[in-house]
Amino acid sequence: MLFVEALTTLLDADERFEVVGTATTGREAVQQASEASADVVLMDMSMPVLDGVAATRRLLAARPELRVIALSGHTDALSHTAALEAGAAEYVEKSGALEQLTETILRVAGRPA
Image (cartoon, rainbow, N blue to C red; front, top):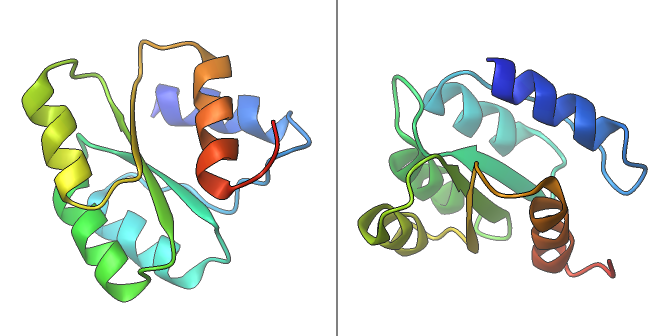
């Protein structure tokens, strides 16, 4: 939960973004993102109840116009490929810089940096 809280605080402090919800399980993420007015969803690939790959598939089946960015602590090619095959627009490693993530969000949303 620390990662989610820290990321939410950082994104909320950036006027280019509005955080409309957070979730602690994959099932919760699908439910909230299906109902929220989000353009982009940051989906953790390692969540309980429903992992990020399955949650991404379910979410995009319900709202195909959404753009999902997979967030993961895994750096292996298999995890990267699984996320993209599930429909994620991008894959960002949690160890990356915040600037990399914000640039990715803006690019995926089709907004200027």
